[in-house]
Image 1 (cartoon, rainbow, N blue to C red):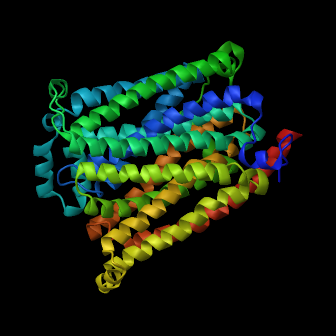
Image 2: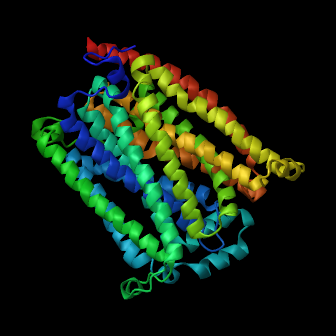
Image 3: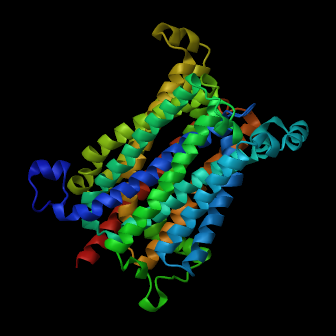
Length: 508
């Protein structure tokens, strides 16, 4: 248990930040806000685009995460390691964010308005006639390849900009002691962005449905429906936020961390590091410390992806149109933000300091166990022959309750992910050397998290080949869910012991 020096009990609980530290914590928190805001908006859009496309559905997501997301994550991580040999960490950030902003600009002004021209409908129709029904998700990726690329880049923003580059900056410049006191502050900023993104998403979708504009400017760029116009506004906001991110990042490096570019290397190298993708993966496999972090990350992503695909299939059934789906997704994002902000103050700001790293880290799997079992219970009852009679007594349809409990599970899982899970995971990297941080985070955040989602998606794909729908495969999804949980908890316990040793060695 860590004692807080210089704070009253009340301030230690709610605001363990020294006044002198605000000059660096505030701009860092604003940086978290903008990067997270784009993440939440992209999360709303990527699912809406691909799931609500004509004759599409949630079954496309497992195929995307195996055949598109994982290869792209490996490719972008390889690009990151290549850039590390030529640029310092600050300049790598500018190169990577420029790639995203250029793509989103090209997408909204070229690919999206003319997607009917770019879609490979004839090829997809041919494949539909020769491939089994279980390959529908793969065929949809081919048919709507512009939307699939957007999904890839939206996922990559989370992987590269948020998990890798932003958190690498934080773990480079803060100590373990500072992290324990400040991560809740960043969590509040990050999750406030989720609240604003949810409100904005719901507002834009509602106004677009009620107030369709026939302006010549929208027509000129090919935005001819209410959803098209909402999509254009979303992307323009993302691009503007991206420019603010570049400005803030530069400000931090000029005024607060001017020597950060030297981290991980000597002065003559100017921050360049000669690492390869192979070295990053090898390091993660050989170091037990980093391997336990990898298992924890893999476990979370496998579990959340398994349940999310099943839940989203129910959401699409209840909300089939793009605007309805967007409004519902925006409400979920808003609720996640609210609960995550509360969690940042009550849990993230206190549990690690008061009860220790292990207790804080174990909260996420325990929550997922309880909410996950509740969700699967609703799914199984929905499939049972007595479901209609049971739920009619309660006044709800089986579909509505399945969506509700799935939403509850997703909200709590995401809220904890954005606070206590990420905080404890990133804190575990701090005792490592600058070079080991780069290798470990490149392997885990660049590839490991996507590998977890892709591995679970591959499981779902194989089940879809047999059962044709996520609902049909739900019993087997539950079995995998139940097997992953003990592995996750054991890894937390073992990493906790190594983390405590690493902290003592730093202190001495």
